[in-house]
Image (cartoon, rainbow, N blue to C red; front, side):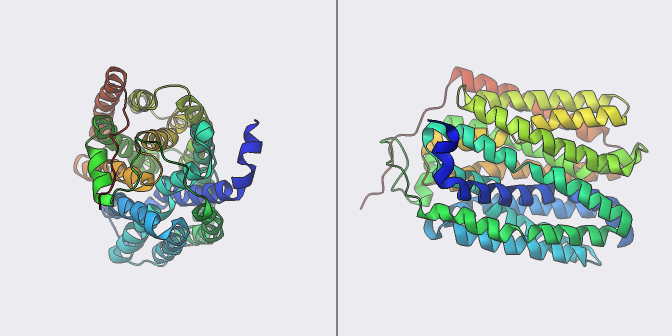
Length: 412
């Protein structure tokens, strides 16, 4: 049966999830373009701004399992809509900020909490529930790809407003875009009416949240995937936060940073589609490790050479292709190992590790830059850890393929 025919009944859900994801991720990935003018205008250091983004990543990571568990109890729609309103509030607070406290609450706490309710883990769980298992990995790739368009649109728009009217107007433009998350979340929330498929005998079904979490961390494949996920967050958030500053140091056109983030967003689409397709056919966890290794090699190549517009855009294309492809692979692996009922929460548990890495990439990169006056040590650490994590992930996935957990049922 053609894919479109299979998906037609759930298209409003998938489109809503994709739009919500593309806005929440795209706007967040583009905040780095405001770092230089914002910190200069309200007299903050680079490490102050990156601390706020680091808090954002920690709030996102540590609240993600809670948001996932709450979708099991209350449904996806209320969680996603509340998260959308928090995103708007966070951007408004940033746009009107005059000091560190407003930036910390707006960019850090509010947007971080919102991302736990609107970003990849929730959007992917919505998409996974809405479609049959036979096309799940492919559809997760499509949703992830559609969700990658946000940076392609928001980064150039934000940079244009920033250069023409100032960073406050640029952030005001982001506020207008974020309002569209509310209707998108409403349509994606139709998934609450979709019944869960009949569970396999090896899925976590009638367990409590605590038992489901204990079962997940008792699975060696899940633990290795979770630990390697830290590298993913560290590399990606280091780039989105510090690449604009690095290009400014190199004396390149400020618009190049927005063009590069847009390039990343555009190639995200291709990478998400490819890895969603590949995950339907090959070992998802081995593919994840391969992504980490290739990213690390690309980082080493770019930062070892003098930055030019051509090399920067090519680097953005390579990293974009290897960026959001982790989304369908992680979501698909969790669904295969543990089923759909607790997918959002268990995926959130893995994501906590990703966000610890994000904290290190954002704040650690800023601290190293302030201390050493360059990003050399930061990118070297990112490359070394990326190669180590990727090689271990591939080796473990091939030596010990993931197995679903033993049946876990809640006893009376």
